[in-house]
Amino acid sequence: MKYTFFFCVFLCAICHAQNVTIAFGSCSHQDQPLPILRNIGDLKPDYFVYLGDNIYGDSRDENVLKSKYDQLAKNPNFDYLKTQTTILATWDDHDFGENDAGKYYPLKDVSKQLFLSFFEEPKKSERYQHDGIYTSYLFRKGLKTIQLILLDTRTFRSDLTRFDAQRDQKDSSFFYDLDYVPTVSSDSSFLGNEQWNWLRKQLLKKADVRIIGSSTQFGHSYNGYESWNNFPSEKKHMFELIQETKANGVLFISGDVHYAELSEVRMPGFYPIYDLTASGISQSWHFATPNTNRIEGPVMENHFGLIEIDCRRKSVGLSIIDGTNTVRINQVIPWKSLRFTH
Image (cartoon, rainbow, N blue to C red; front, side, top):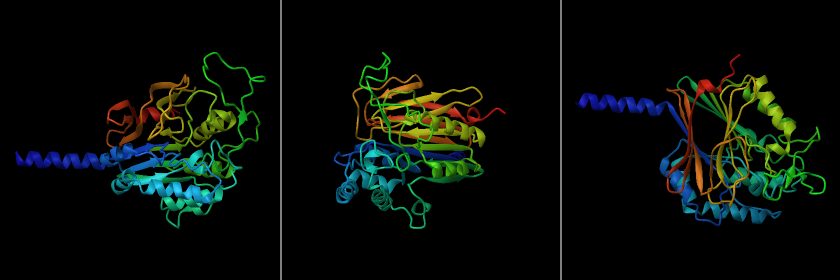
């Protein structure tokens, strides 16, 4: 019996060694107690990804931005999370510095330095060498490679086009006021040329699974709020780039909207593109917008996202877990379904 027991322990160790777990979330107000962070820490994922609105800075005063990072640093649940996992991060508008801000936000260079300092970015990091904070990581498990790409959707983004009730028609499915309409200008920028060129090089790297972290939603349908849908030419370019580079295994994770959902985009000649939105470490919203691409959710209570990559079974588990540790969304996706067929 003892040999059977030790053999089982050995097998469990092998199975665990073939897994990569990545928790993620967004919309974390520094004034709140943030118990979700302790729940994530208890899980001991390999990595935790902050997808933006990691603080609510909302200021053109450097000292105000820094004081809010200082407040998060003093939070015992954040401190506990740091002891249990490796924290990686990108930003959204509120930690960038201003609601819905883009490339014209005047403190973006100051904000970048505060961000990199707070998240203890190594001084040799490429993030110090280019504008913006986009970056990528490769995690290897045996012969398998997992790629994590964190985009910067703020530093290079053009101005948004406001919804005009006298000019723009509103579909009857929208029961709320719309903020923005898609920008039709061909020279509008979401990621910027420098970041697009960098992203192309990343997608050409060999990887079995690629997770693209975007602070705003990618896979949902137009809802009149801020997202990739404000720049349809840029969203189209992302699909074209994935196809051009023959990048298999792409999944998106996103935040921003203060609820959770799983979206799926299906296009001719393309494998399904999933976007798991986790947006509610402390923030919540009173309704979810229409989304014809939604296949699970919404989850309105505070929550976090979890990606479980099983390199032995060649599958990816996508989950949303709420503050009571209840799994609210769960999808297991075989790697083979995230491949171009020819």
